[in-house]
Length: 236
Length: 203
Ligand SMILES: [Zn+2]
Image (tube, rainbow over all chains, first blue to last red; front, side):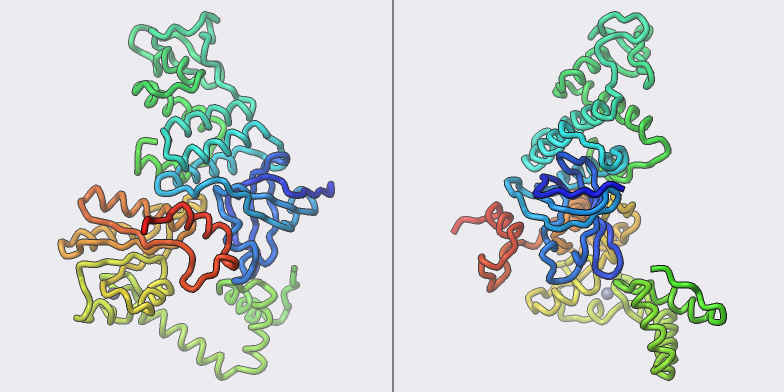
């Protein structure tokens, strides 16, 4: 097992689980090490310096030592600069975290995705178009995992996607031109997803369905708990 | 740490295992507790066993506020001196007793006995939200005060309840957060000061 340490590494708490009497297992998403699981000894003691710091959605600077599988958190400092999420924003944040927890393997660096995650949280805190933030994140995540969806060419003919046509979407291959009004999505929707453009109503609805289906393929039999709650609250 | 089971004391093993359900009690403390009870406190251990069995048989949830009680309605819900138009929602009985100690709240309560925590698989159906909804829309309640914790989970719970109530025309409010009373900025954690700065108000 490789010995590793990190000093003042930018990162976010994805989730924490109680461990033994007073400790926590902390699941983190860090800039240079990707997803990391650490033991935070004594973090649940009433006077612990880590209490009130190990919160999801806040930029932190983290230092740890020990093995990659389960190292020990040495310090966590508030990096600040971002307001807390509130209301529906918290639920959207839980959704991003659940996606990362279920789809990112540990110790697999994803610096670009880290930047997208940080920007997404800032946008969720600023109450911008939350549905668009979620769609862009889902798209980037698929990209980073090596499953970038084909959006601009017909998978069978290789022809450029026609915004005026309807397409079926084969999760393994990509868009396939459909007959007339059949098919799952407008060509326009595919082109909109490709350039992160979510102002069109039909695009919003179809993109939500399509990206959900593509993510479901990567999740296999795992269920996303946060999605059900989000759907109940709003069509996100 | 792994502890080899004692070949002649399966009862001891199952006691140690049972004690681990207590919050913050791991295998080592559970073992210490079990030895202590059996070695030095045998009569009081019997008392503990009787008290536990008795509580399990008699304690249930109040049909109005969901708090623990032995009657159909708890004392608070039966008291005539409270304002029934105000309903304060808390996560736990411990939170309720904290709000009671302030002596600054004269309404009634609803105890969720939990919070939404989607990442742990705890959704709206796993806490008493249907029950709360029925209570809040009984025509007597005019304001629901959301006093769930200021954790991400508590915040999500408050939001979910507020949305549920808004759809049914019930007013919801959220307790304020900020620097603690008597708190000197120098000794307050950064997150709290940061939030207090964002939530500042005009004078
Ligand atoms: Zn009651």
